[in-house]
Length: 257
Ligand SMILES: *Cc1c(COP(=O)(O)O)cnc(C)c1O
Image (tube, rainbow, N blue to C red; front, side, top):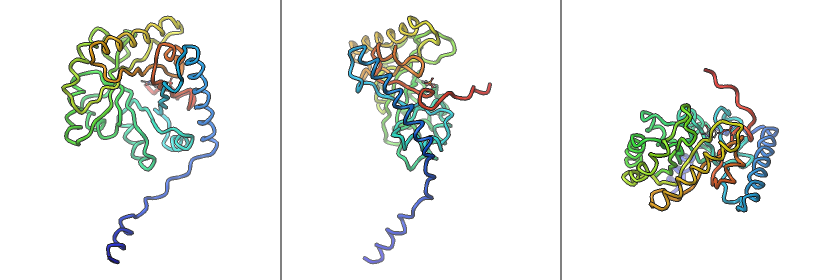
């Protein structure tokens, strides 16, 4: 009995203590979050919606693990990344925090293994090949995964996602991949100062969701849409998840070409 007590002490060896976050950085993130929440609330009230129906996903791409410790201290529990390798590195660096990791960028099929390992949720599902590759890994691990189907509502070549006319058929094929739990649809709006064009992208995603509901293929029918620059339009169009980076963490460095 004594021996087993000693064993369990040894097996409880503590990991190296994590560095405590910079208080100034915690305050900056807290202020950024409060400002974004106020914007969500104002837009929801304008639309006659309950702001509690809009989830705020912090987009943490390019933000260092040290700053993300500050974000966690400020209350951030879910983090969105657009690259599998970056998500993986951060998930390892922040393993002690129990973050809910969300992939929001295109996942190449050959990264499906890492994606299935690191992500709790993939909002950028855009091909049946990826669905199949994820499902295979997840089945082997005995796990499920929340997914959103990404739709290219703007028609811009630079954006990933299914063309709108392929969405119904795509959704109809997803039940074959039993480890994937379909939560809804995701989009990025046109990059435009013209709020009419932006709004049209969000309205289109909602219409595709409504069609999917009629067909019973769109799972929970959630809508991930809206970012720092256009979250008001998205909330007014029915968004249930805004993905916000720069309005919380400040401007990102320009991507190196
Ligand atoms: C970067 C990114 C966002 C957040 O953009 P911000 O302008 O930082 O708010 C949202 N969604 C996707 C898919 C992204 O890649």
